[in-house]
Image (cartoon, rainbow, N blue to C red):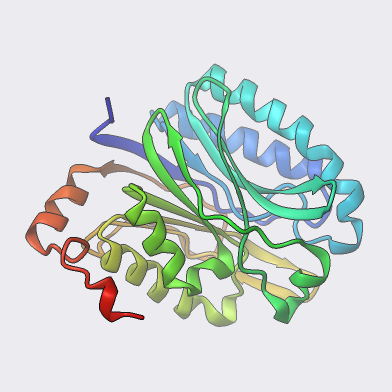
Length: 262
């Protein structure tokens, strides 16, 4: 049985480049704090354990299995679901991969970032994923997107059509384009009539400043939780009944005309 109301939290912090232990310590403390507020779902930024320490990724990605074990124990202990993006070391290369660690410690979903941001050479260091993913969690179906994916409305629409009533977007989005971040988060929520949880990092590294401004947005485009440009862990109650209500009021998904879009 799906939950109608979920208490969700997002962790926006300054990801330190290559400092896995420090980043994990920050996350553990923040997750424990959110758990004390009754939070059931926690979303972390893109590449939160390592940052884009691209030249060191083969070495740093070896820590990902141990981090997932750590998160599994934390999820079971605190009875909450944790979602975040980590470097995955596969036989054919490195992927920017979102993992969904469910409340029983199991991996409920794995999504490899499809759209790589060539302007920062992501395509040189990472392999692209090839599949949209809706994770089947104890909290219901959750669609997964990572940073640059947000600029591709087809991906989010695919997640909605596959049953997602919530989409999480993990990012390291630059401050200079934070207005785009906010506009696109709202657009994806409104056009697909679902909740969008956008979690961006803040701070800076390697000459880049990151925008923060993490948001939780309802199917009506209302911001139900927000952060500024500093570390923050906002949380809110997500009323999933609003998804069905908005789709009944304005039946956009039902009245699609795919045959006209070719």
